Length: 281
View 1 (tube, rainbow, N blue to C red):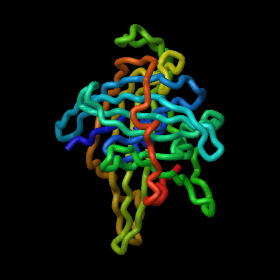
View 2 (view 1 turned 90 degrees about the horizontal axis):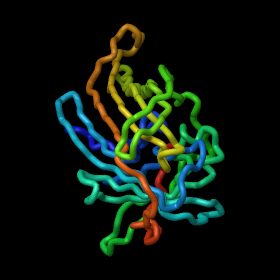
View 3 (view 1 turned 180 degrees about the vertical axis):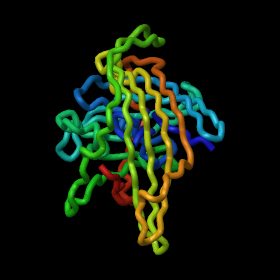
View 4 (view 1 turned 120 degrees about the vertical axis):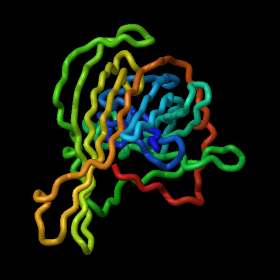
């Protein structure tokens, strides 16, 4: 079955900047990884709409739509923050929605694109029986532990150049990049060691001066899932990687504009009966 990617948290991911971020806490993940953090390129009320086409090794295909809107600003625990709402679904007029609150301090951080979750402050976790969006505080790190090496998250840029794309909004001049990022996780067990990895090759066309919030005009991603296992006392290099699966996604800009009103952010209530959500920065 094809995983229904959100152009983030899967446009989610969570490989910020080059693999769009996803946070799988609900049916509609946060779009925190989509925001263009090198400068604030939007005003409250700005929105952007994408079409996301997906396929996998089994021949499964999907077409989904994602709308991202900046809908509200407020102070939260001494920080100026904004609420980002995400709509996702099979048709633009029947989207399901979620919301997340993000600190505007992210725009002062030169590596915020490598650690967007670091600036999440509150995240919708569910909607109660009365239809009220309930949100929980977000904890992105344990102050007793050192932060991870964010520099290691930088993708390898293989190609970059100027390009112009035809879009429903007319021709848009873009900065094109092709990049590769590999993430591996290694676990030991009584029988040996298992290494699981994801290699993502992403082509992205971006113009933050033309497209609000995300800057993204188009993206193509090829994601390969691999494993390698080796027994105790042996070297990993003597055992080949095995490709388990792959996903292909194409994300295309459909529209953007102004005038978005909050659907959820102005109605949220703290989920005081829930613990803070722990998310890696």
